Length: 198
Image (cartoon, rainbow, N blue to C red):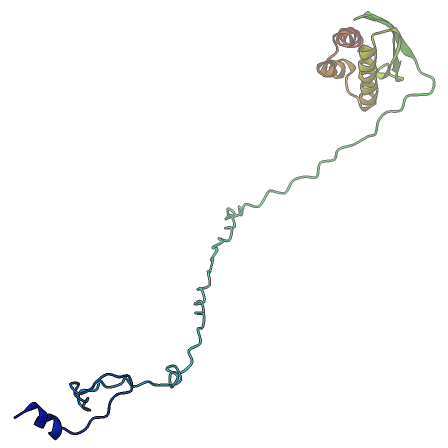
């Protein structure tokens, strides 16, 4: 078989536009053509439901219960009252008399006071029976603190004597209240004079 016969038997083939010969290139068959990928133009998220992000709600906390236990104060148990009935007593009569009143015109005892830097007179007013009823001081010279303490000493004696309190006993009890050394020395001299006479 000659080459010429082969060419004559072959069907005519149109020349390609680009000038290349396609004689030796076999025509593509449908089986050898690559399959084109399928392109979907639909929205991929159209079928899915819309998801809305919701913040999680916090779980409610359990309430805190604070219990306070208070004990009621226990009442003290009082001891049972004694059932002894007191014996009847006789009514005691006590005569309470008020202070004695000094007469307007009365006798008095005047003492000279020279002790503890104090210089003056102690005047003791007397009841009709001769018992003391008042004590007065006339100080000519005395330290300031001693003078005030002695005036208080005499005023207290004057308040107590009308009730029948012994002058010497009352004066000796008042000595413990005097803190000034000069006043204490003068008050001791007054107490000694009153104790000796009444």
